Image (cartoon, rainbow, N blue to C red; front, side):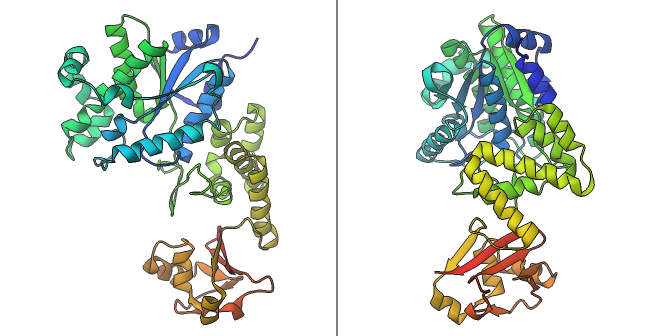
Length: 410
């Protein structure tokens, strides 16, 4: 008999909290369940942070269950206060619609939406034309303000000031679950653990209003050993869009994660069998780098395809093993005439995004963190011209141990 997907998710490390564990496990083992995960369209690409929930959706769909990807065309206009210290910036409806369309395109690479195997929905369809008085009569009566104020997402914001605007968010997300239950028979909401309070609101609303069972389940959030959300770099988020984070940079991000996180990420972010995950996770010392290579390759393969994963791995090995250069390393090109005149090291660091600004670039050089073609740069006024390029016509800048960028002439 096929393994229950609940046990698969549990063994792989996904499950953080459940509303009714035994009932959820039994339900997922005996029938096809329609579940949903919400994605607020706050950017034009999904991130590495979303990837964990996408993996969970893929496991669920492979086990025969039906995902609903709910795009937050309506809720994005409010902004979820969960895990946020400040109110989100407001976005235009056009921008939100564009982002939602991009999310749909990206999700379609991972989830099969054909023949009703999965559904894409947008809460703008029912939230944007709501009659406020009716909404309060129908939905608001089921929520206790006292209880809402004990929710973690609101407690964190009370000292800084929580607007009524955001206070509505829990009601809207709960209403989403109710609408999806009515429209598609959706019985379960899944999400990151920071969504627990909002998910409880929806489960409770359906049970009160429809007198029907509803369930919630949250996933572990990917964090570093210091508790900071994973998926962030000096340049910002790690995106799933190859135009925003190249497959090489994406590969490098996972290749360079902390040793203590390797086994956890192998379980959550790859489809490798658990015995292989445990074997790789148990490697020690320099051997752990083999496990990191496997992790980076497998994740890049799922997100960008096998060919890009191969190219990224080859490029990374060329740098680490041979110290060579390859076409897959991030590259910046300048017109040959500009390189004849020369570019100072601070300009090169900023242009290649190895530093955010000139003052950060200056600090990197002063602290001895920059080398060009394997020679350490100590003078922040140093200018490089085409005469400094190697025999391949390349200037390879290295920041720290793992930041690489090559300069070429157009």
